[in-house]
Amino acid sequence: MPSHSVPTNAIQLRGAVKRYGAITAVDGLDLDVPEGTCVGLLGPNGAGKSTTMKLLTAQAIADEGEIEVLGYELPGESKQARAECGVVPQLDNLDTTLTVQQNLVVFSYLYRIPRPKRGAAVERALETANLTDRRDTKVDELSGGMRRRLLIARALVHRPRLLLLDEPTVGLDPQVRQELWALIDALRSEGVSILMSTHYIEEAQRLAESVTIMSHGKAVATGPPAQLIAEHAGHEAIEVYGPPPRLAEAEAEARAAGLHTRRTGTSVAVLGMNATNGRDAPEGERRPSNLEDVFVLLTGEEIA
Amino acid sequence: MSAAAAARDRAKRRLGRLERPALAGVLVREIINFSSYWRSTTFSSTVEPTIYLLAFGFGFGSLVSEVGGLRYVEFVGTGTVATAVLFASVFPAMFGTFVKYQFQHTYDAILAAPVDTEELVTGEVLWISIRTSVYGCSPLLVAMVFGLDPSWGMLVVPLIAFTAGFGWACLGVLISALLKSIDNFGYVTSSVITPLFLVAGTFFPIDQLPEWAQIAAQANPLYHCVELVRHAVFGWEGLTDLAHYGALLVFGLVTWRIAIWAMTRKLID
Image (cartoon, rainbow over all chains, first blue to last red; front, side, top):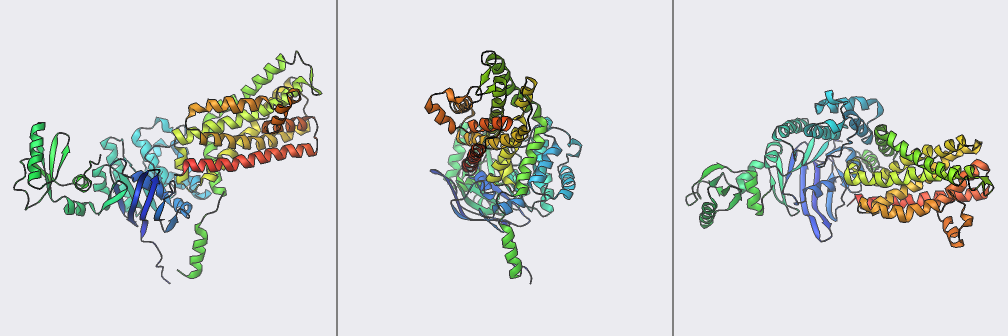
């Protein structure tokens, strides 16, 4: 009989709620990660992304709602789910006095790789992360980018079906970030399901097939980045540069024309421009809309 | 999927508690890490009791020749085993646990793998107990240099040290789970650990103490450890020793469960 019970979602949350005292960190979250896809969880600090990640490994237990990971119901079956999951934490928690290879060996035991396969698994992880020449280097002596690659390699040592990445490139310089993007992209093309929390818009836009935008513990929008932009932010935004009085003026003009604005440091962006509504907008530089505009329009908050 | 296969799948799903592969994973991590810090740990776990042994042995040894029917070097040589057991277990458990969850976030990484808090705590404590069973014997070796006669019963000392070390390590994990800051460790060390360590018959016999202190000493696991070590070296006392060992087992069992409860509360939101 053909199998119909194979889950089509690697992750499925329905109405998940997590409270810490008076604070509701996750507030009725629905989230799907279809198998074999990369989903971005986007939101500012404090939106509930990290708590959501903790719920998925049962390091936080939901107060309400249903959570399924790889077809296992959490928290009861979480150990089995964890066995088939790889986790890349936001905070580097490598064993710093050990070598690169020793760190991987430890995790080959923790993830229960059978003895005859351990050596090969460690080699493969070293290769994936491009750390083969660094196998005997102590973690203390690695650069920030290498440490992050090792964290990813450690999460892959047992060939997980699902990878949870919590802010994978936070605090890294742009070149290292692009290196990691290439690595994550390669994993996705191998069919690994990925959930990645991030507050870097570009990261989500480049890597994720679908994005869930979180604010105050809720999903405020879900869909492919391009579709979210088209739906919520229109085609273009106008960036108005100038001294503060000019910016205030531009904001007033835009508001009068019924348009939304956001302050981005040195400029005011007038959002949601399309063919029909641009006539009364202030003069400025036109640029394509992006996910950040969507976020601001939906939540009224800046993302990063 | 057939019904039978589905049932089999279901049965496989919920992994058990205290699984060997999970414990092995935690132990392997500790063993590999030990290769990078064994020198300092071995130094502090063996040198400190040795200093006590020498200081008390020479200091009091010149004043008192015999205590409770034993030469003083015999009395203090066996008593210091308990000191070594305590130092080798409760302190690494307190500080190691705190550093690993608070500063290094090691436990976040381990709990993201198929390891539960119960297995994590048990693995960590087992590893400390194994070390303690070795370190606990060092005072005997030093005392032998100063005239303690070897005996067959000494071969049981590692087992006593292991059992007592297990309880102390669990207590250390418990303390680190309950305290919010590493600065508070001093309060516990001064008010709990030091009295326990002194009022256990290690350096002076407890039958010289006021009656209330003697009764209190019965509740001190270290006292039972001291008595067992002395009896192992100088002659067993049958049921009394079974009771002493039973006390150590109860101590270990109770602190083990409470330590797991406290760490679960700490690590799982």
